[in-house]
Length: 356
Image (tube, rainbow, N blue to C red):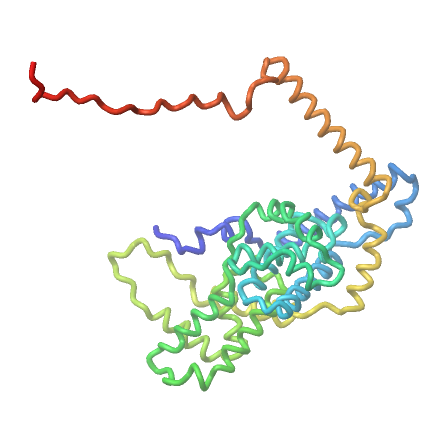
């Protein structure tokens, strides 16, 4: 059976979860991080962890959501297109399904995710120009985390977005049999309002649970329920030829309606910028419970750095010893020198006309 293109994407295969699974991932990761950081505190200053107020999974998510909103503000400053903003927010949210804010602060990861998105969406900006327009930021702040972010994304950079699905549905609505010929102009406010709901959806978990087209349809339904229903009915009335058995079955109207209603609830209830004071309180506590191995200058950081340098030195020595044992110390790693090419001489043709 032929599958829709979206179902062949890495997003469909690797970045879809149930609400329960998302909660479990965040809670488990938070608890594991707290355990590791507590041990690190105790290893260098016994008893110090008892006074630390660690952030919980909900507070971590609150902080990440706040910086998703900050991405939107930065994109407005740089005048980046919608594709860059949507991609960067997806990168940031995916990153924190694999990492914790107690290891990597969202402010730093946000800058890297946005810069990475400009490249993967083919809207590049020079690193110097990017960093120079962000206060207290240098190029290394952006580049230092680029490999970590890419690795956390499993190098899966392609993202399917609801705003593109929304545009497709809007074009389709204009071609409905009984649509007004000038609906694109007279009813443009419907599209604009739906797009604002799509942007609000980026502050939620909707993209991890539902498809981009479902989110787009829910956003239209929030603005013009009758129009969304009309478009949906036009698709349901399409007759599928009996000989086309490779087309996947349609979801039932009841199932689709339930999904649309659930998305609408997610957007209206959680698609809001977090309270700034609540975010400041989480950020204040984060300063005291951040992984000391990631804080420059701490005993844990210096010990980890020394250990990493020691391992790197041992690896270099082992490699050099292996080359020496194998007699490869004087061997050119690029291979033997190329032989001087033989220059072709003139061909001495025999002149058949010569007299004997």
